[in-house]
Image 1 (cartoon, rainbow, N blue to C red):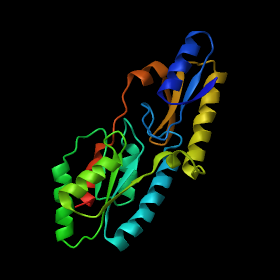
Image 2 (image 1 turned 135 degrees about the vertical axis):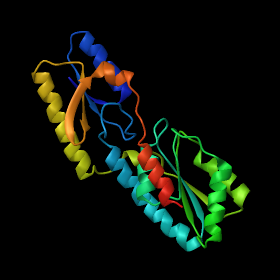
Image 3 (image 1 turned 180 degrees about the vertical axis):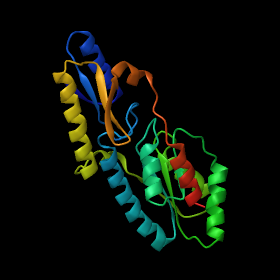
Image 4 (image 1 turned 45 degrees about the horizontal axis):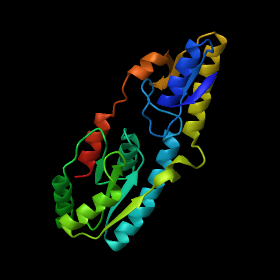
Length: 223
C-alpha cells in the first residue's frame, strides 16, 4: 500500500507494515514539515496561493498606507510563512521555530515609517500567534492603521503547481518501485533533486528543521 500524508499517516503505514501489509509513505502536506525530504507534495501549491494573496494585499496596503498582518498556516513549522514572506517581500516574518520581540517589530515599523515607508507587510504562522491579536497589539503600540487577513483553509485548495505535479509523479513512481521490490516500511523523499527513501521509523524519529539561511536572508532584505 502507498500511503500519502504526514506524521499520522506514516505511523499508520509503519503499523500496517509490522502486521504484514507492506507500506511505503509519500510525503503529502502543505506545511512541508516531514523529516527526510526537502519538499512535500502540496507545499509549492500552498505557497503560490499565499504569495498571490500577499501581492493583492500589498496593493491595498500601498494605496491606503496601512500595515497588514497576514496569518498563514503552520502550527509547528514556519516554512509557508518563511518562503511566502521572503518571496512576497514581507517586512517581518514570524515562525514557530524562533521567538519574537513585539517591541523590536514595532521599532522596525517606526523606523521604516520615518524613512518614508508608507506600508508594511507582516506574515505570521498560526503557530506563533493569532494574526488578529498581533494586529491589535501593533496598532496599540504604534498607532499605525493596521489591518489583518487570515488566509485560512484557502491555502489547502486550488490547482496544483507544475512543481507539485512533477514531484508527486516522481515520488509516486519510486514508491511503486519499492512495493514491487517487496520493500515495506519505507518513506520516499527528495534531496538535492534526487529521489531517496528512508525507513519510516527513522522519519518518525527525526525532526523537521527550518532553513535558517532563508530566515536570515528575509531579515536582511527587510531592512
